[in-house]
Each structure stands twice: as structure tokens, then as C-alpha cells.
Length: 106
Image (cartoon, rainbow, N blue to C red; front, side, top):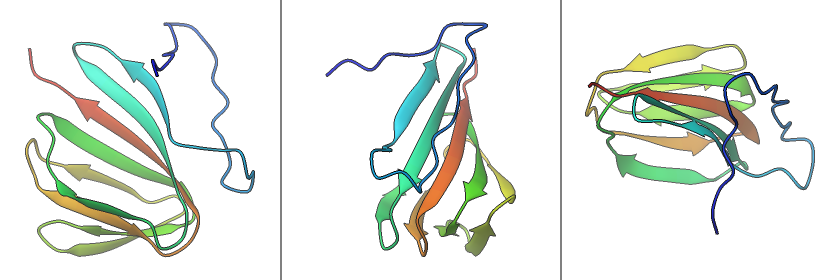
């Protein structure tokens, strides 16, 4: 299934985990950056992995534990930056909405 990405200038309303129909959505993907809204139900785990670019995670709502070089609890309003290639995983302790942005080099 192909994912529809937004175009420059499009307004997007991010989904709430309160809705039963919400799901993870790729918002933008270009050669320079990618943005995804991750919607994780409590107990969901994203296995440890790494990405080629610099990454940021912003916890819009809920709570997750980021496991990387150390464990970090992220709650509503928390933001974290990861180095390029840094291995990490996530576990949601509550239904959570996370905004992931990855910045790629030239």
C-alpha cells in the first residue's frame, strides 16, 4: 500500500491516540528529511534499530521509554535528539503519540 505524503504548504492535523481509528502515519519523506507520527498503544515495543540520519522524537501525548545509550522516560511535551546511527528502541507504557523527524545528510 502506497503512503500519501503531504506536500509543502499542506496543513496537517495530527491524530490523537484517543481515537480508535488512529494509526502510525508517514507525513513527509524527501531526500533531506522524513517525518512520521508514531501512534503506539500501551505495551507496544519498537525493536532496537538505527537510522542513517539524525533523529528527534517529540512526545505529543502518552509515555514511552526510549532505550538507547541509556533508558530515558519520555512523557507529554518531552523532546529528545539522537545522533546519526544511534541504536534505539521504544516501549509505550501508555497509549502514545510520538512525532519522529529524521534529518539526512547530502
